[in-house]
Image (spheres, helix red, strand yellow):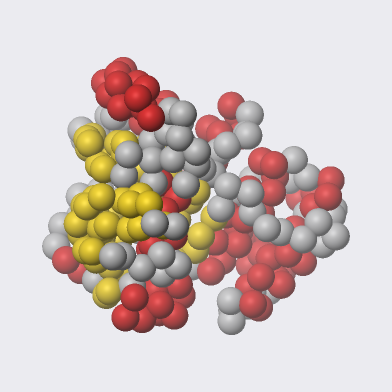
Length: 256
């Protein structure tokens, strides 16, 4: 069950898109979207292929500068200080780029070093405990891992980086139902500990189970926003109807 926390005030705001317009390869992909993610909150950006979900994530990482509007991380303009922005964020892509010839501990140790951080084996094992990666699997090379196990290693790495913000790009794509439920529990726990989480997905049910807010993105425009009431999840049927209505005319588009 969700542990809802009420956050207000500018000091709690971690991510903010304000009238954000982005053009890629001459095509206007985002058309003035506005939303915010506070500390302790999971915000799910829901939409079909080609609606601009991944483009939104890349804008927060500073890879796609706005042609109009602003993106802010911890109340600072992203483009004015990209290095500080990326230091505050842990990004989990749909398929985490981990090394198959290394085991879980070795991958985490290596990528922490690249990020200018470090952790001892006890810390690494504690993070792997949090994501429920079986102890006997931790010394195996990732070439033997399922996608769900790889995602656990990636989220353990994000935990050890101890950033204020997590960006998740279709994090449950290709996972089986039990792995999806387990992943959502981890994400919910991280948010309840004070992290701000922005995830993009086309999974209506999963978004309703884990998110405090859902933004419905269609053709680069935010066409609806839904919020959880108290400890209740966002109503799946309501969001599904809105999602089905929004996605139908544009489902032929390619992913952006």
